[in-house]
Image (cartoon, rainbow, N blue to C red; front, side, top):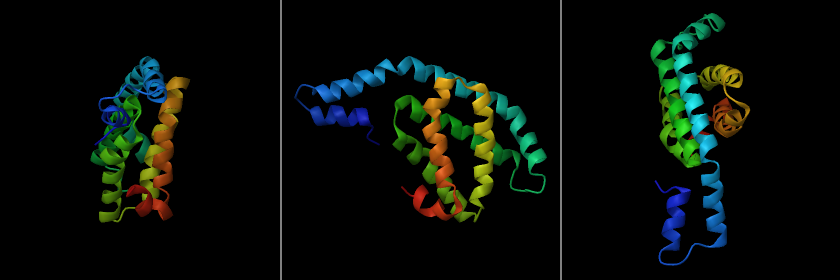
Length: 161
């Protein structure tokens, strides 16, 4: 996969970086400390949720048989991909590594996307309480994309981007 950074490097070939390219790189590297902190916070959140999320889902949605430990663990592990994409400032990374996979699983298993969306809504609720304001801001676009793509009417088109 080509990231925005590899595209800049490829496009420059043997020329000097343009002012716009330099500015994009400098903005990215200037934000790296905050992205690293956010990534660490997400890692801590995942660890905390690994011990509690299954029970909370069972309590909140007692009739949903879909919420097994394996599914909950898989969804929690997607936070790593989300954090990696945020760290790289590369939304394509999240789409390619998680969203497309999740879309296939939802379609192939004929799952109700709103049940998956409910898991992420609970994760986001916990994230709102645990992550710093800046980390929440950095992660929000990925949570938004998940919520949008899991709207039942949008599942196939949104996840196949």
